[in-house]
Amino acid sequence: MAYLIAIANEKGGVAKTTTAVSLGAALVEAGQSVLLVDLDPQANLSMAVGVEPVPSPRSMMSVFQDSGSLHEHVVETGIPGLDIIPAAFDLGMAERFLPIRNGYEALLRRYLRSSSWKYDTILLDCPPFLGALTVNALAAADMLIMPTQAEYFSVSALRTMMGLIRKVRNEHNPQLLYRLLLTMYDRRNRIHRTLAEQLRVTFGNGVLETVIEVDTRLRESAIAGLPIIYHSPHSRSALQYRALSQEILAYVKETSAEPA
Image (cartoon, rainbow, N blue to C red):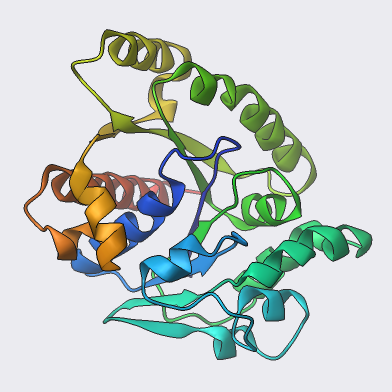
């Protein structure tokens, strides 16, 4: 069964989409087959892999409207082993019609868990707000990765995220795990170093060892429409996302080997 990872944070601009596409590509390079699921009406993840964000029978909006098999919505990205269920701007309407459906929080979990997937990992890229789409992702996921800058407003947003995690665990997904990922980190910045240390003291093992530092190559890769490990394979951020993929794979292997 595929391992489901949601990538979410209430705070925007913390590299959620960059992490989804970069981690996905690094996992593929490591031998995994990966499905990206774009749950953000801005559709940045879809654009990052060259898929136009236009309403389509193969978009996430169509999935939530119960239109056909989920497998029919998968689009190849051009990178072997990396596929996507894309989003379009009409996905924002899901925030209005999903909450009026009974048990809407479990829709995505039911779609993803009941399907026979060829993928090893499914990455769910969430919008920068905590609505019905994000709740669906957390209810479906095995793990939540929260990209977090070592900045005051980003760290402050974690309070709301932790509240949502508790709610989802209590009501929908008691096995949900979470990990913080420090992104856009500048080791020369004293405030960054101080807040990063505070996060590690507060959350302990809940903070991933891998840190994603500031790198202009990441911005360039978005313009190029390629994951960083293809756009600039020897760049610092490419090496760090490869390290992140190995850390995630090691964790999944370790927990999967534990006795029930």
